[in-house]
Amino acid sequence: MKKTFLAAALATLTLAAAVPAHAQFAKPEDAIKYRRAAFTVMGTHFSRLGAMANGRVPFDARIAAENADVVLFASKLPYAAFGPGTEKGGETRAKPEIWTETDKFNAAATKLQEDVAKLNAAAKTGNPDALKTAFGAAAQSCKACHDNYRRD
Image (cartoon, rainbow, N blue to C red; front, side):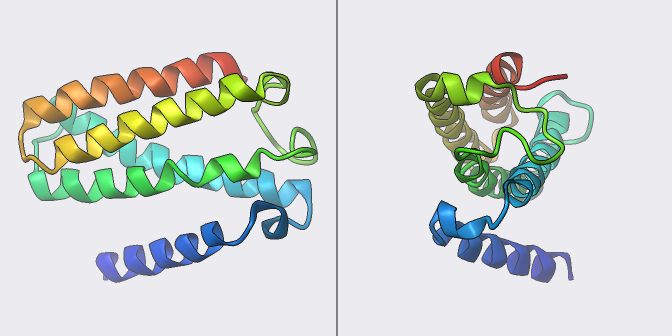
């Protein structure tokens, strides 16, 4: 049942991601809700990997690979929802620097996606040490973006 739900959710998100960003969001609030939801999904599955990488839960290669797949997919979703006009209009923790330092913000997003791709590959090795190493790098990318572009 969980796999069916996950597959349906991923299919829905894939279709949504395929539509041009400007057509996705009728209002800024819609974009804000979308990006918050994408970050929530990514963060939830990233936390599950972190629990394994840090030894808080036993390492399970299958579960690590499944969560890494979700994180990889979700890492591509939120950035289309940071378009012009989405800095206000709903509940957001995004700092204004996202829109004034667009190149730097986009570079941080790219760095995260690269590190998450490495995390995904490491999770698929079945090696907990490889997961731990790749998780640390991806976590640093997350933290750097949070420090620069997210209000607490």
